[in-house]
Amino acid sequence: MNKSKWIVDVGGGFAFWSSLVEFGLINFDSEDVEDEVDGETNFVVVNLGVRYQFTKMLELGIATGYEYFSSWVHPYYDKGDHLRYADLKDNHFVHLAVESKVDWFCFFNHVQVYSRLGAGAILKEDDYEVKLGLPNFQFSPIGVEIVGPVGIYVERGVGYRGLFSGGLSFRF
Image (cartoon, rainbow, N blue to C red):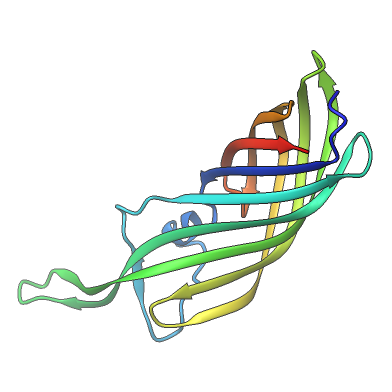
């Protein structure tokens, strides 16, 4: 088992918040701007985390992420009664959170099975407004990491790291 105490991870995943907007389950927009998510948007979130390993099982730290999607705004009907949109709006989410990672067990001395839990806030900026303080979270019930000075991880979860995410970890 690696004796390093500081862990930095860099990764990405299938974006969670913009996916919920796409499916119409949440609306982050101001009341006066109606929009529809551009189906061509790439729903990717990029993450950076720094944690300290307090015990063999417990790591605590901070995480940040960035997510982007575009949406069509200002709907109108043309002369043929077809729905059109006048403009394309850029939406940016910056995720800030504190998080914990619990390493449940390790086998072959290099493969860890873990869970991750985090809470924080979203800074949301688009062409019309900036919002800060929207609640944010991460719950990853299962993840697997190949541990070493440079490791590889994959996890399934819900929240700021994405629905499916993975990346590299560096231990110092």
